[in-house]
Amino acid sequence: MSDKEIQSDKKMISENDLLSETKAETKAEMDTISKQILELQEKSELTKSEKRRLSRLQKKVESLEAQQEEEKEQYHRDIYYMKEAIRQAKKAAVLNEVPIGCVIVKDDVIISRGYNRRNTDHSTLSHAEISAIRKASQKLNDWRLEDCTLYVTLEPCQMCAGAIVQARIKRVVVGSMNPKAGCAGSVLNILQMKEFNHQVELVTGIGKEECSDLLKVFFRKLR
Ligand SMILES: [Zn+2]
Image (cartoon, rainbow, N blue to C red):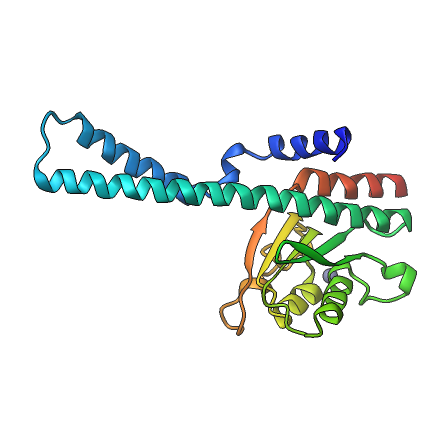
């Protein structure tokens, strides 16, 4: 990685609350258990059952620590792949297209990339996610993208969210939200409707500053 890339990596992390590296629920559970351990340790003498409880709690803390470590690694992987999606979005900007980019990852490898080409292709189907989904399916020779994670710089629209559910993509990571048209929680949450046969794991706000800056700069130039 170049210095510039590292710099921008740091920027993306520091702009997110560091707490977001691990899930709030994990942190809350950790705090509760640590408090219970402290209370037991402050007692001058422990009964047998208290000793057993203490050792149970200590084991639980160890497993929570491992979980936090895992969440932290996942967070850093998410930042890394979102940067790749941003790289795709920049390709769209070069073509004077709204800068939206996407990558699909399977087993820690990028299997496809896509960026918005709606005007260039004269096609409403040329959204970043649809292109990436099409290419991923070609690569895997399967319409099912079950063990894949899709990274996209802007919250998916209804068409793309529909395609994501249809492709049974496991996990979606979104950069910035789109309050007026997004279907991963803003207007609708098509990705997680219990009425459908597939629900997606959803993470939002990864690299959101950089993703929304791209759009802001693009629309400012248009004016
Ligand atoms: Zn779309």
